[in-house]
Image 1 (cartoon, helix red, strand yellow):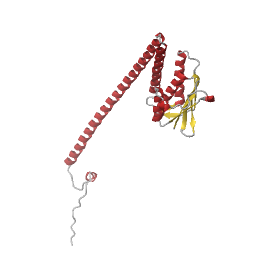
Image 2 (cartoon, rainbow, N blue to C red; image 1 turned 60 degrees about the vertical axis):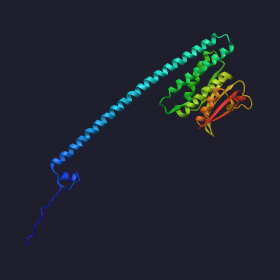
Image 3 (tube, helix red, strand yellow; image 1 turned 30 degrees about the horizontal axis):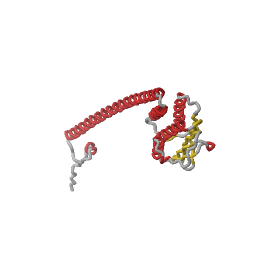
Image 4 (cartoon, one colour; image 1 turned 90 degrees about the vertical axis):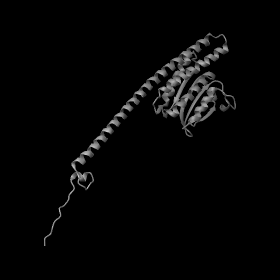
Length: 260
């Protein structure tokens, strides 16, 4: 008996690579490789376009930063000019009440300029070393008091070292600014800014001053002054609690913000 053997068909390596058990010609491989080359070229072009767009975006961001810094610089110069003009007008006014109001306005604008400068020092910062922030802010106030020859008022900072998120630290900066402004206006003697742990809320930030105590039953919610409205607004923003009482040795007034 004669046994006939059938020719055996084997896949080429390229057939196996491309997942095919059917014989392919060299031309078909060449066409497929050409498709891959075209796809690669298109991807490289798309990548180049994306890189060009990213460079344009970076250039625009840098331009915006330059313009923002220039705008801030001009704003601070304008605020300083307004302060100078108000102060000059106050000294030149023969009306005592008008002079006092002009001085108040000048101090308010100066306070805005100080806070604005401090806020931009925190651009892009996620957390702020709050003790240092308080010391810098109070140093600005002390300089202002010295320029007004009010050396009887001294600002003291007693604070623990703590890093606070800027979303909390910035509103607290505004609150302290307003509380010190009120203390310099209505209080006497020393002004104490204190930051300490609080077992109930986390932290307690207070501003106290010597001088007259607050009237019995004083309600900050009923106060129509702009400063107190600003304070209440920022206390609500950080989910804090405002407490009002007497200062050290049961003298003067103390405003305390509890926050976590």
